[in-house]
Amino acid sequence: MADDDLLPVLSFGNLMSEGIALSRRGQHEKALGRFNDALKLRGADKHCLITRSKCFLRLGDTENSLKDAEASLQIDDTFYEGLYQKAESLYAMGDFEFALVFYHRGRRLRPDLHKFLLGIHKAEEAIINCIGNPSTVKLENKEELCFVSRQAEKQQKKPKDQKDQKHTKKKSPKTEQQLLGRLYDDKAYLEKLLKDEDLMQSNTRQGTKVMDLVMGGISYLNQRRDFWQQQKPMYAREYERKLLRLGWGRDRKLKPAEIARAIAKEMEDIEQMLARGSAEQSCRKAEHLLKKIRAWSEDDVPNKYELIGNLHSCIGNAQLAMGQMEAALHSHKMDLECAREHSLTDAVSRALDNIGHVYARLGKFQQAISTWEEKIPLAQSSLEKAWLFHEIGRCYLELDNAEVAQDYGEQSLQSADEEGDVEWQLHATVLVAQAQVKLKNYPSAILNFERALEKARLMPSETAQNGIIAALDNVSKSLIAELSKGQKDGAIPSHEDRLFSRESIKTTAENVEEEEEKGNQDEQP
Image (cartoon, rainbow, N blue to C red; front, side, top):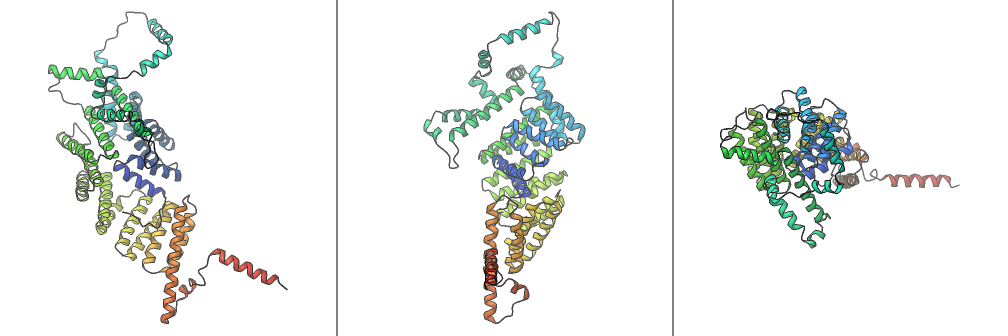
């Protein structure tokens, strides 16, 4: 739901909520910006570090993803989400052995979570793909062990440029096509764009060089190619194809780790497509994967229903991006139905969040209110309640029910006070003031806007302060007009109204000038 243009407020809770919503919709770069701003306000928040780490990982920035995961563990070394994210980052970097260590550590802390078991399976399989199965390898001591030293010595004598040449050896198009799959066409297109010199020298509307965007895309695809090469080398792929040709793998059942890895790659592609603006492709791919997962058993996919709900959510986000509001609403309701049926509390909260946003976008504010009110008991912190009460209050304000909007604004302020979050205190105070303006309770509105202005001065946003000052000016004018009208009608203004009359509404500068003038008069003989 779009807020009024009165006050764009930067708060930790608001930035976190916006970032999570953007990330769920596949807009990871925008989400990253929100998390960066949130961490400027509260740098030691482990949950924000993990959500930003996930964003980095989905954008292919494994190094920063690992840094954020490690930073969260420095705050709390028993934080299981930090252990899982560190393992995922290490796995994406190709450090399968270290990833396996942290998957095991996480499983010891939370044996009830299937994702750690799936991580162990996929890391073990990746290691076997790299070095071969130990049961099929026999080591024989036919030579002295000093041959290892001689091999190392030869390696040291090898010219440096020869090493670099080997390292940067370009893979054949056939190999790249096998590794990248459908993404190979994207890379070929980007490389073709590089030949257009005029295009490469141009800039986007945001001032970004087109060449930087193209090179960034190619770099990311090269990283994924190298990762998939390490995760499952070409000889392992050839061996599997040979088994299939000979008929040995015809009745072979896929291992849970193989299925988990395939699903993870598909989910990554779905999110990447949505992030690139290919909502239609993302939607089709998610629908296709949904059919496949439904065909598997829970033994093959332990978190089957969690994935089904997640895919309904992905489809809903893609449909929302395409402007298909009713279809998006249906998909998010399917996510909610699946979550309730299988007692997935986090998924229920996610689905209610998304359904509320769709209703608000459709202008169905009463339905949005009902949905978000159902989410309130699932809120895990006072900060989340502050955000929910605020959104519900804004919906009531849109419905011109200013009294209830004021009540929810006060509840939002109370939750923000419990959390000790100054930014949310500001946001809630502004909502209360806006409701009081609609109720024509101008004196109270002025007091609340002044309180909001005091809190806004603690923030680095001049826009917020300017917005409040403009609102104060408008409310003051409305109060003056109301008092003038009352005087014409012969009504006697109340004591509170007199306090905010034309004579009392003066700037600090005017009061200072009057005091100085009075002092000068006293000094004259």
